Length: 343
Ligand code: KG4
Ligand code: ZN
Image 1 (tube, rainbow, N blue to C red):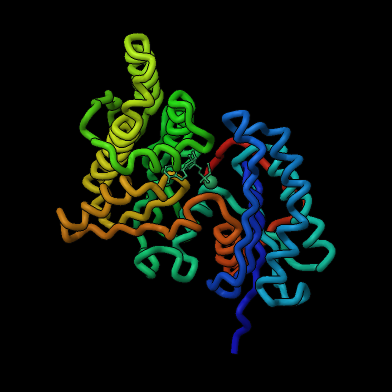
Image 2: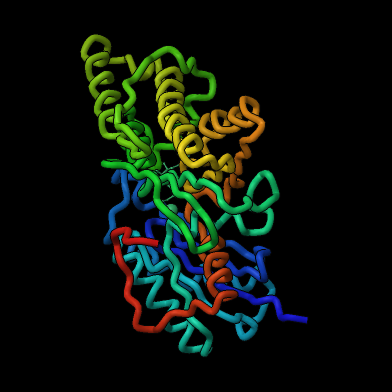
């Protein structure tokens, strides 16, 4: 019988140190160490993030191996995020992975962070459907760094159909949350406070970008202008209306995203949609996309379980495994990149 490969995945592109061990497509361990230090700065400070990764990475690797119950010598290959992301944090993960590969004499596999978000649906039971999306499908990647609609024809055959022309959706939610006086990361805080809110109370402007590209900076400015205007008249405006403001922001965000995806469906004739990235954990966005299935029986929506939405090591390990199966190994001389290039 063919041996089931055991892969370790290391993620360090932003402010989460993620390490996971998978056997075949099954997650044996998935350790995430969140960096709390950035909370008081209202956003990620790259220099501090690098130092925190340096402090946490050995701990995360040790815990992941221990929890997986495999011995270090059973690991067949090491995969890690090469980019895009913050260069300092990426270098910490890259150096660790290279040393690990050299020390154990096992292959090295580099991973594109966005591709990993998309391919996280191929981890066993990673989505609430408990099934893998069939090719071709459309992926909506919505995170702190990215907002893209991607046509996925095969594991490593992907085509970008639309991207944000300015801010990413997660970045905008984080900035709006800051203006509301909420903690970083702001997306989950907006979700939390929107729970009992009236999502029709406030109307915000939606971008008018044609085609499948997004724009979020106009929406952000509109919300911030609106808050300033109302606060000038009533200094307690946010406090008195927080739930309704958050619910209305979430509704507009979900509509901007879903309207573009509907356009992409019409353009491609592809009705399978897989959401990925931190923002896809949002219940209003999930609810909006799930309603597609009711409206049109041809639609099939794939929603990740919460632990696989935000950055994690398992998505790096699964992408590594899929490369390993195709013998797509990398040399020790690779070096991280910060900006997205191509797939
Ligand atoms: O995928 P991720 O962990 O990191 C990047 O690759 O950027 O995404 C982080 C982003 C942050 O902007 C955070 O506010 C947002 O995901 N986020 C959410 C939720 N959970 C995380 N946004 C809305 N609702 C949530 N429940
Ligand atoms: Zn990410």
